[in-house]
Amino acid sequence: MTKLDRLARSLRDAKDIVDDLTLREVKLSIGGSVHDPTDPVGRLLFNVLAMVAEFEADLIRARTREGMQVAKAAGRLRGKQPKLSPAQEKHLVEVHQRGEHTTVQIAELFSVARSTVYRAIQRAGDTAA
Picture (cartoon, rainbow, N blue to C red):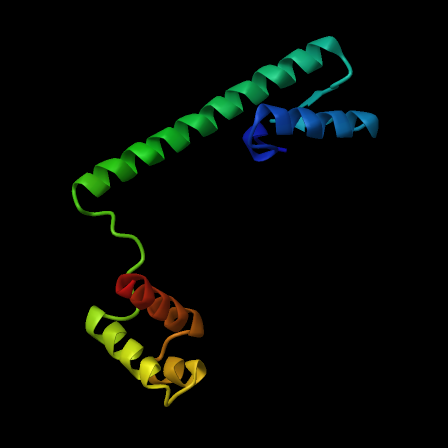
């Protein structure tokens, strides 16, 4: 294994994996050096490396969340764009309410998936209530 953070996402996961490997008498090779998890020094080294890897992962998550908040505040974080415009969605609901077409036919007419049709109908029902 080249990096410990590729082994597990948390210290608990890493410990469980090492315990399992220890039971099978497997030695760990991290970054080119071999560590025996049954040896006290090897265990200490592994735990320190696992804590640092978890810390790095936490830092990356925190920076990502911070970046998303900045982008959202600047109006650049929009997420996935809707398949249908509000006018198209309104028309889709009207077609459904007339009852002339099945959901599958409506999906084909508007070139969307059935799940999109169901969501549009559900949103229309939520706003009508």
